[in-house]
Image 1: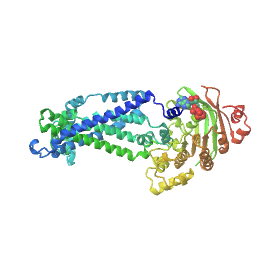
Image 2 (image 1 turned 180 degrees about the vertical axis):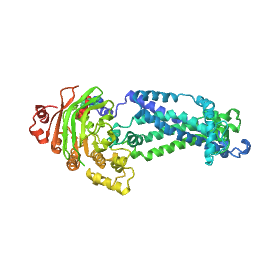
Image 3 (image 1 turned 30 degrees about the horizontal axis):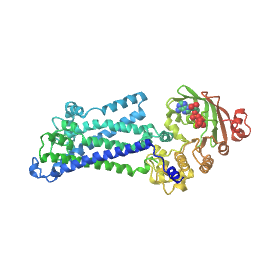
Length: 313
Length: 259
Ligand SMILES: Nc1ncnc2c1ncn2[C@@H]1O[C@H](COP(=O)(O)OP(=O)(O)OP(=O)(O)O)[C@@H](O)[C@H]1O
Ligand SMILES: [Mg+2]
């Protein structure tokens, strides 16, 4: 009798629940384990780079930090520029698909955007060198002529068009699909209740979007941007193919001298690297890892600071 | 300012489905008019045509005319956006903007018309609208907090405050109390009674007591069967509708014998 009472109090363990909970725990720990393995590998392999001396670097670079500095700059500069270009366009496309286009057109546009996400980055790289760079080069010359007094646009203009600005355009095109796809899904989920509330107050469609759709979608827009930014920060092939690099911090967007990005620098130098050179490249990889982590944490903080107004309650 | 609504032979379609047929009705200023009738008879459909909110639904369209102080809402060149600024609406489920503070919710509609408002004007208007909605005392200390943190009844009064802040001529309410408890419901009924001084009010309700408590005139809608269009059966003073209706169906409905 007492044992029967004891067993009835405890919830019965159903096999389905057990399988499901183990599966989630396993996949949860797996991602942690993989991340930890990568991080430890990078950390261990990087250690020699931090103590490397002037002999281990080309040119007049004396230590690891002055080597990685311009790379960090180039990485963030190009990725942020790409984000600045991509996010407004992505929001525009997503709004068009979710709220303006007729249903049929919206659907085919949606497929098209998703398709763009499947294009390999080598193709974007080829497009960057073969089509985009020659196309924009004349514009660069004109821009430098007219706006050269503004430091980031100062000359001399690159003769090939293979500048950090071109790279940013390529990156923007690459991250556009993912940002658009997420924004579209978020915008479609705006509660009809709130859209009607805005319209009933006499909002035009654009005002309704500003009152109801965009505020509701803001956390999603930020998350989408961060995903895009992460992709832009880590992009290797397209940058390595398009950019003509030099090992300094360079703010000018349109000249032949450009700061390289970490990922592209690794790709370019890895084939010939040996000894400490390999460790140095891996250490720059570790720095990229940390930069990406910081960027994502920043995004979390931004989202959480607006939690009370998110509409989740 | 309160305005007179005149509807002439209005049909409402969802694509090809005739949902409401042949409604003609005159609603006087400074009155409360209740729409009653069984579910699916087209009360929501009809009330939405009074500020062109049905146009939000793909495929919805009307035939006939709706005159507000003589101006046809469906005349050529009439902007639905301007119509909705004149004819406000409160919905069945409270829908304050979750991403805005209480004050921003109240001012949401006003800021559409008049972007630059001084801080004192904004504060004064917020207080006036919230007092008008009987909510001021409950929220005056937390105007900067999100509107979604209020109770359901408070949220609904916030929506009413938001609607009256733009000073419309007419306020439409589609079952404004159906998601609320009896106390909040009474608070809103009192509010409707007061608002009648300044606005023409139309309210849809399933609650007979509510209709008889708050309204001056009552319109009874009915459908002959599923798939048939809803029609206005009888429209008269509320006391007449509830004590001595002229149509048998109305009497059956208000006495609870069907529907
Ligand atoms: N978006 C829509 N698309 C197509 N038909 C609709 C739509 N909304 C309502 N209808 C139809 O129009 C008719 C009237 O619906 P309506 O919502 O106006 O009824 P109601 O009187 O408000 O009912 P309730 O009392 O349940 O709210 C119903 O037959 C309904 O199925
Ligand atoms: Mg209804």
